[in-house]
Image 1 (cartoon, rainbow, N blue to C red):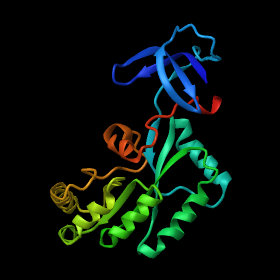
Image 2: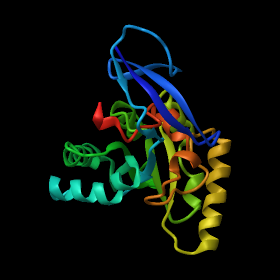
Image 3: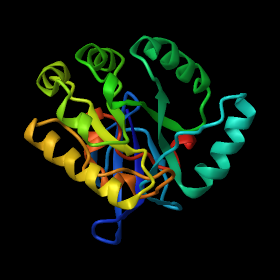
Image 4: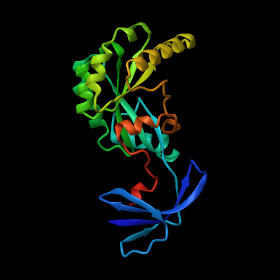
Length: 238
């Protein structure tokens, strides 16, 4: 155990800087206490820095050609903008592609310089209890559902899908394929009506690529996926 001492942490909720200390055990924050605590535990003074929560962004098009390209891309688009965590999906058109595409995605991110949360993107017509169970097994907590028409929403076996989700409960997020605003609104309206009635975990609307406010607007993603909500820019200094 050690202490990250006298940390100047900016609170977005209270819009002020708090002076606190973090007690670290097994590479995780065990507790947070007032800054000036006398104890013989090993300490690291970070009072010369100001710490802020990182941004979380969605990126569906990470380069996968080679590590150097990924490193440069991540630095330019994320690290220099204060983003240390991204949501990045792999796409399938058929259920049999799941294992292959998941493996390819994981291999491409082996040396990723940013933290990531894997998501699945697929057409609504192939969502099934067996596919949901695959997501549970592989800890895929976010599923982007492609929709170009609202009619299929009423035809899905939501009862069986809901049972397959429990207790991990991956969250469904709409991905509207239509470019027409009126059509998009119609699909979103029906999406919320059906999934609310069926008690399916979901987001109410789409999320945008490289949007720095995902963590604020869609906080439920992190509580469901049980991933760390915030990472600090000084993480690599520990």
